[in-house]
Length: 394
View (cartoon, rainbow, N blue to C red):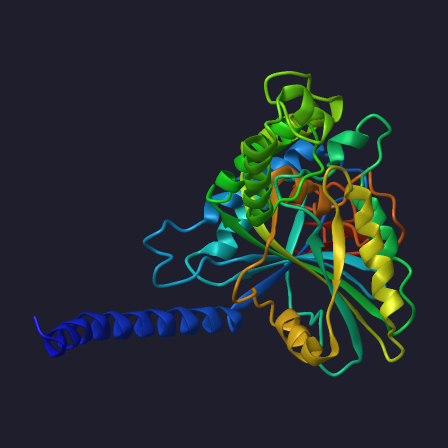
């Protein structure tokens, strides 16, 4: 075949493919922004004396993982995400925002009410993050690869403390006219990231230390240098160990390495979520150290991994604020991956174990009200129902 025929055949194959990709991209972007215009926000409250355990919060996010679309649906539309928010102005309130499509609001509400029977779940029209006020903001990201586990609520079961109380305490110190918001965008994902995670676990087992680089380039170069050392200098096992080499057949794993392997194995067996965490402080006199106090509260989850702040620079602050106010998920995704237990430790409806002042809670454990309560005569009080107050008279 001459070059002209080859070029014509290539154009005939590539042009329809390019047009198909442009069409798919256009449909995905339209679906992405149509969701922003149809988001429903709900406020959730628990009674002060609710003693629900952390296992309930973990099972809640395991159920929430079920909203993940199958692969053939994700071709024309991106996977919808759920936004979890903790907002502080005069008091501290918990919110959840869901796109109004495919019955997701009703499904998410049923998941919460099934896990927490005493929860109060009501729709809210409050604007949490505005665009007309001075704001300082930052992101929270994992310092290491997601296979390195965070500290979860199970560590503090003995002393009865909830690690989320450190976050709510940092929100409780807001001044008049100041709002503080923690926004967590959650998108369920599959097990595609497990391949690299297992490579990291094998490297940790090989070197008997968790302090290794997680970049594949470093692994390749290190392997080349080890092979070159064996070929040139003829190092054996004893010489290789003496000069920093490794021996995979002898020696015992350290206690720290054993704990890392156990925690990593448990994490790989749980449902995973791709998470974007944003911190926004808005006031007329907002300074960056105000948002640093919020970011430092996430240090309570430090174990093999930690959550660190990533400062938003001046040239994209306006864009970041707009993304936060509209609850838009990043176009290229987030590198932070948490399992259901880690996510439940960071965000769950506050119950008996969270003692922060200013938390907006339900009045009491709400029971079904009696239908034939007298409502005429002298008013003596109100019967609290899930959606309304009913007068009670004599």
